[in-house]
Length: 404
Ligand code: ASP
Ligand code: MG
Image 1 (tube, rainbow, N blue to C red):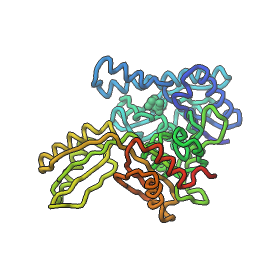
Image 2: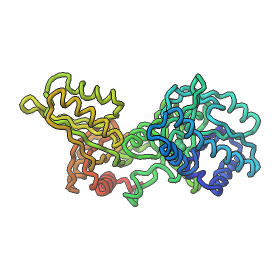
Image 3: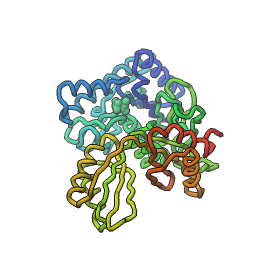
Image 4: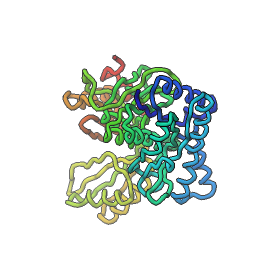
């Protein structure tokens, strides 16, 4: 007998029919002799609709009240799914984050999970009941309700799996797994049977939106084995774990991210402390900076370009303009028509020439590279956004990703 955490996303519980489909899926696992803990997201677009309702009242809702409102979505799912499970002849108990006691930091709208109490869950399991737990929500030590950031139900599922020592955490979603590239751009993209935590993390942070980044981090930290798979198709999905699969390929996937804004500060004095000043101001403004490039100095001046997500662009430009005035830089320019393409693979560490192959594939398509950044297992290039489909297809071909 195994203990399995099964997480179902919003589309999987959007209608009563789907709710029953999910209930039958859970019941099947139960009847195969396993213990199951279920985590669910809010149905369909409920979270977006709740945010829209808050906006009808105020443009700046208090984060505490917003959490109070958003936590409602998941509560709808757990109650309805528990009813559907009961209709299927199973014993099930719906539980909110605070009933379980999923303890988080005292931060609203993006709290991190600090600890999960196991008592209530173990009690339900020992009585042969299926706990159906609300994703995305927790409670602080002082009893305040919190939420975990968009897509946070994945993190709830991983945290429960870690706390209970589950054999696997299954993430059920509307796609059959993680692909070598976005199948909407690359028709012959392949479902990957296996990925390492690091590959999943690099993919999540470079535009692949299969698992919340924080969930992948938590899974890595606590060595929770993930299985990303389809709610609607009865197929094996993608396993995410520790060890790279043999034989190791240099590149396993191509990702792209259109949520990129490039900002350039021109003619900054090329003296010590300038980068510190600029990025210190951006850090204070909670701007998350991705890539950074500085040009060679000419006449004691240099340009610094960096990228941020579009949501952070305004705060980044404001911060950069302040520093530019202070240091006598001539201009701050922001550009939205750019995007990032990346190649990711744990095998890069031991295979030289990946960067050259990537640049070669882009050159053959006459695509200009504006910025480059690398990690041990990822290479990213900023290019013009309109070239993204061509770039992704060319890279997929260059690294033979369509082949098994
Ligand atoms: N319902 C939340 C959201 O839409 C959490 C989740 O779906 O995981 O972001
Ligand atoms: Mg959702």
